[in-house]
Length: 88
Image (cartoon, rainbow, N blue to C red):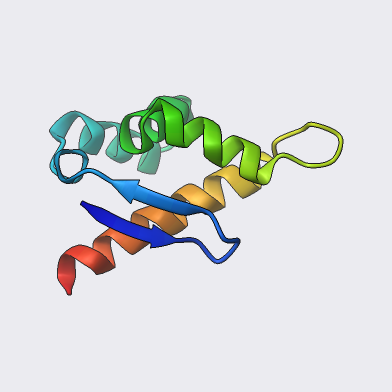
């Protein structure tokens, strides 16, 4: 299991099996090729439903909205942290 914290303070735990998921890799490749429709399911697959909802609450603003930019930024930061964690 890999644990970490984003710069905004969101603490996450990624199960080892989520780090070795070919179907998630396919989704991430499709996102990289411009198919942003895969983003929401990739986030759910990687974080799990419970952590995805916790992340949404973490970045929800005072008006109750969740910024797409913040959500994508947090997800990218978590992905980068897992790459660094695997390489260390």
